[in-house]
Image (cartoon, rainbow over all chains, first blue to last red; front, side, top):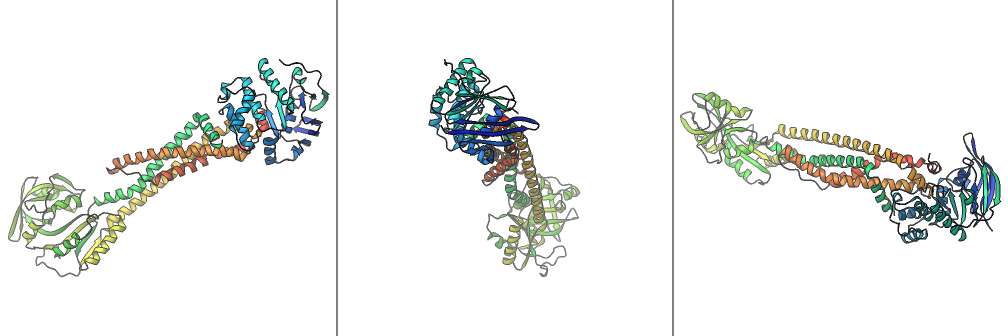
Length: 227
Length: 380
């Protein structure tokens, strides 16, 4: 299977703090990777670098043949629009846009908007009847499903999910995880940061961090059944 | 999607933008009113200056031979020559015109200056006069006269009193219709009908001068005087420069005042929008960070915000311009006694100024270019 993500000797320092310290790993296309570790171990920093949101101090971070480290501001902007789909723990929806418009916003920055496609994307995550609702009118689980629809709308090469169920109750957590599993089943490549071992076990592999270093890369054991 | 985003931004931030909207509408209203006033004031002031009296005087040429044997009558000229020419002038431009024959007569053995004129024109040529009594409505009315209030005081005259005038061995009587308070040399004169004074002085068909009030700006009046001088070469025709120059100087000062106020209001409005936008830019850092993470370039993101500000400026400018038209209408009524009609060119000028001011006030949005999405999404 082709390598989609190739990270080589990646370092990131914030002043005197070394957030990532010589991290190297590969991710094949279609894999679901769980990135685990305690708070402050560098998981989110890694996700941000792979998504072109942050810069590195040294090293390589190649995604779909593009070395993110070498991209300028304009290149990073295009990279984010065309290759990455983000799902954040805090949902990060624009509060004054409806669910539909939040999805269309990603389309707008990618190329052109297609309202029908955006609507279908929301119907796919079970929000066909909530498209005209503002984020404040949606539950946390619904907001995260809007974020999933937004992440998928431009058919990204890589989905980066940072604690996607961290702010959800159990019922909504299961809905979102089933969506991720469904995406994985369709061949999407997912890098998911999580604290929860039970969620980590859903992935094909787990990459564990401690103090900015990769301490373990292993295939996940048996996946538990989802409700 | 662009305009949909702009509309949602405006809707979502209407509370925060209220201050900027109020500033823009208020600024636009005052600027629109001032611009309407500036454009309308020229006509109004010209009309106002016309009320100050005649602005062209036709008199005998300096080298003209004396046509009177009396030392009390200055150099004269034939009335018909002047009056026929004046009758041929476009009536729309001539507000008022009257011939004058000045003589020094006696009343109660006191010498007084008597002006024979068309009394029906006095009110138009000397609208600033204050009158105790009644105007004389007809130039054919030989039985009534107007008396300057200094003369009236000396002769103990009041409206309704009879007045006898003597010149050499001739005499005439009239009833005092009104006492004139002109605040000038007219307070020392008596105004009677031209025909009566010509008869009294035995100078039929003779006048001392003619006064004409022409509508228009100072250059128009000067042009008119030049034209009159061409058709009346035997007389001296001169514009009364004092009035024309005062008009020009006042117009210049008013224009300078209006331009200064417009600039001041523009600066104040821009500062108000600036303060609002600075606060809004801080609030929108999170939105910008998110939009950047979704692949939005800073130029496209700031473009949305600038369009929002531009719409704000245009809408505020439009509303303000309409309000300003009403304001200038009211100011015209209050200051000049007649409404100043709104000028169509003020509307686009006000809208354009407000859009420029709003965009200038949106300078703090440049800060958004420095937003780092990773920091924003981390909650920093």
